[in-house]
Amino acid sequence: MTGTHTRPRLRTLALAGLGALVAVGVSAGPAAAHAEVTASDPRALAENVTLSFTSEAESDSAGIAELRVVLPKGITPDAVTLKDAPKEWKLTATPDGYSVGGTALATGVDAAYSITVRQLPDEKSLAFKTLETYGDGKISRWIEVPTDGQKVDNPAPVLELKAAAPGAKPIAPSPSQTPSAVPSVQSSAAAPSTPAAAASAETANGKEAGSNTGAVLGVVAAVVALAAAGTFWWLRRSRSRSQA
Image (cartoon, rainbow, N blue to C red; front, side):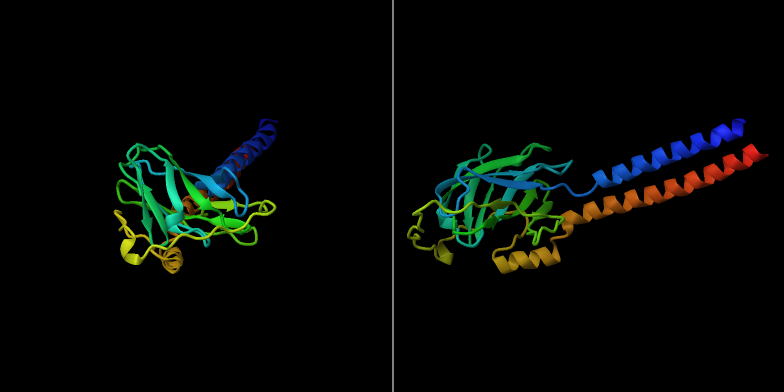
């Protein structure tokens, strides 16, 4: 009688343990977004719009020191001004966007700042590819743009735009900066300087931040497999003892 009652209890415990491990594996997957953007007026052709960015701190050993952003088509570097940022952080124009940074933030502190854009382009969505540089030189690349609703490991901040207000028109662009007038970017690591370079970085290095996620999932899968094997062995051994 004791063996008969013990086996169902063992099966229940084993299934519960496997369920917990599977839950851990699911929770260890990539988060929905690690860098986000919101707008004070998310409409196409809106003028003097405040864009607020937040980059999640992920390093356990260093704080965020710089954020490098590639601007989407329709927004030029000279159309952007810094509105709010961490103390002593400054904005520097780059050929394809800007960088904002300064003294590294404390470890674990998210980087939040806002810019003012002269006018948003007439688009349905805007992607702001972002590279986060930490005080120890580590770089997290959030430069992948999801298509057709597919999920990506390193999503760029994307701003969805509503239709333009009635009568809204593009304002005359200001004279573009010449290459010699663009301030140089002071960074502890190289970052893409053109959209093509950004795409190249995505191919060559874009999986750097996602590799940690893949490693975590691999470890979880291995743990689940070992747990299943151990549970099976334990059940067979318990059944053998009860029959003996």
